[in-house]
Length: 351
Image (cartoon, rainbow, N blue to C red):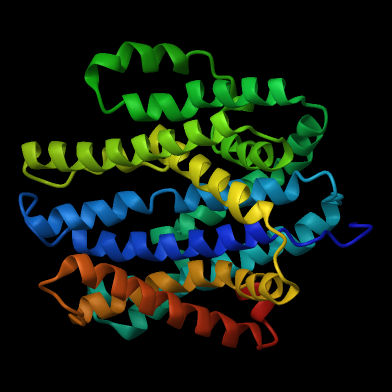
């Protein structure tokens, strides 16, 4: 059990709000990727916004790691399951059912079939709900990850992060190139699972928050983030145009570009907002909005898909304005919906 209430970390609240906004932007760009010809300007703009926001989900994972691996955060396994994991499971079941009903209805136009069949598809985790599986998995392993980081020095943590990149994020990036197939196969033979997967993002969030970093570190983080974005954007456009169809292989959340972008963005928030003493009212406002961001994540995709399916598009001929405007509207409505749901008796289990 937590013996004392942890002090709110304002830069983490701000980063969480930004990550939720970027997720909304990402998915509003995503629904526009499939429409235009890959040689058109509209396609380039859709890829631009999609790539620009790819740091969002990795940053959410980093922020979870930062919170739960914090030395002030006392870990009680019973509380972890009864509060954190239970909330994720109940929210996943509810929203998975809602999204399945929608997807099945779009496919069959049968209300009865959609309402009944949707129950059987709940474990599938359609659309963006795969994120819940990742976080639940990390929470299950949290007691061991926390014990590991409690005894790690800065240098040991850096070694772990480099190893994680070599085992997970670099191979995922290089698998798009046939020439690197021998290397990715070779790396896969080691099967060092303790340093593989999204646990690297979890630990990276704690690393950025827990240790002090100099100006050179920050500059290199920003340059790496910019390089990750440019690589993702330019390669997706180039390869898609050559193939004559959308190729999303360069946009994986497990790719090194997305990792570098999230790393740079979190470093930016810590080095700016994290270095300021915010007024109590500003910090309180950030905390109040940040608590609804999980709800925004769960809700927003429905508010993105339905209007798009109905053809409700603002400024359809100006996609460079249409995508961000849609994202702002969806974010605002999702935030309002999350606040309303939170007022209900079951709100804390749904958002």
